[in-house]
Length: 525
Image 1: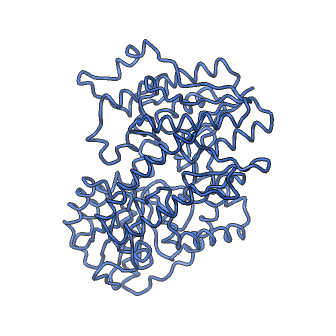
Image 2 (image 1 turned 120 degrees about the vertical axis):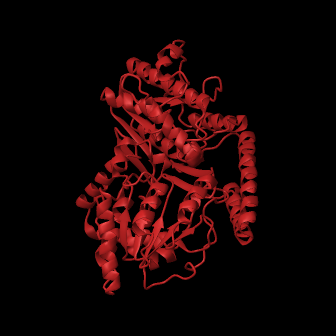
Image 3 (image 1 turned 30 degrees about the horizontal axis):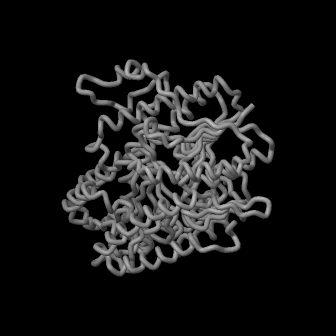
């Protein structure tokens, strides 16, 4: 029996963990089947790690893969890409109407939701521009490639006696067909991805890690099975680190602007201040298991609701804090601002604002979030928390999760009464529950002690007193880093236009990281 690995692009940081998993199975003398991308543009129409399909990036990726496989001493069997099916146009003819428009939500083949995988990729790629930039030819190419992969996994399963399959991510067009097909025939599969709450890898049996409802149930199991003292220690450690540290995986950080400790001008502590902290939910929209936990369709739907209910209420003031990672979503932000301008009691705070997110959290009476870590931080500050979207913390009591809008407004009205009577105090129960929830998130997933992450672009694998750095050959490595350097300089220029002082900070940060990537140390092989 064989273990199948459908691995992520080697230039992604998670590849070091895949290598670690493979080495672990090799130690146990398991038979391995590794499914990789060859970089053949005649077959591969799109790659998440290389959206522009830059040839140099592709060469660096395949070179890194080759060098990595050499470390395995041939103790595996290799599969590349997939075979093209000449009857594809006939099979997909019914998926297009007379206007050649695709409805990805409804496209399935042999009860496998290929369209949802394509939609997931399109949403991640285009984000708020998805509806306008919904390109027929591009979506068709992804759909075709998704079909080829489905046909490929059928053949692989038929030819090899698979004991278990390991699959990166699981939700995108090139992974979802594998997950769904193996689920259909009840063949064991685990999808893995990085955790946002710890330096661990999340594994989801027979599912994708983006199924937040399933993960919330798993976190609850951790809470039940782990001693409270351990959870408290881990949770407090999490907040100690979280509230002082801002880290990024990018050579030049896109998202951390030079926030100060200031609050919005005219912040009136006598009013019921409600902080709304949005986030980009696009990557979750294709996960059908999460859908019933969206109380509102999106930010715009939510703001329209607030406008109808609270526009004339002078006892309440809303602060809409836009997530920094939406800085490039200009048309979407314009729509939000248009609605925000209709309010007399709402202030829009843009992605690049210097107003402190943490300070706003500390001073808001209620925090409204869309399933982000802001909920945890706000509860830690003893605030009332409302969560409007799926979250891995849905089973924890530090927040309110409503299924109907009337309950949402009733809760706001209740807290307003407490505010007027000066009875709205620090919520000790929410504070304690947040610490426990953070502790549970810490214990979610698997830690890889043999892996040391120096930087996104440099990870070290420790094996038998050796330190192995997985990288491309020197030429492709230099070319790949040159491409990233060019992109970093472009980002730096953009930062200069936004905030000159910030760009100086980013420049020094970049230089420090660049040196860290290239300097030799005792960790280098």
